[in-house]
Length: 107
Image 1 (cartoon, rainbow, N blue to C red):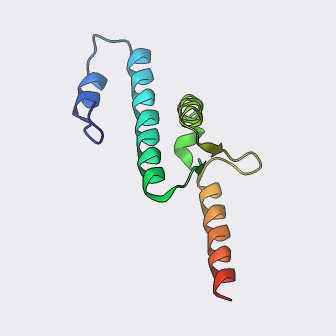
Image 2 (image 1 turned 180 degrees about the horizontal axis):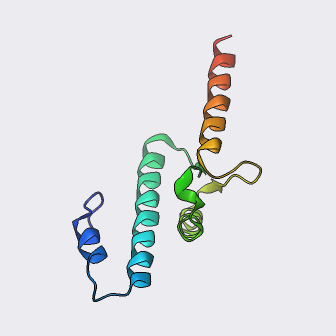
């Protein structure tokens, strides 16, 4: 599939000749691979190799496992919240940490 081109994925999702579980598996695999593709592109521009995964989408165990495995295979240091929930609470906590770090740099 061409990066950013979702037409083949949508066609597969509505193809009732495939089982629901097969379509779901391909959907999760496509999302995980898209995440890796974006991470690789960002790393090429910035050198960043550490990734934190949070937000409601990562409450999906299958997607999270695939994304972590694929990212680690590409040499990323992947972090998943353990003491905070995976939902948006972790995102807002990260935003607070980032704001404090920026504030500390200015003062």
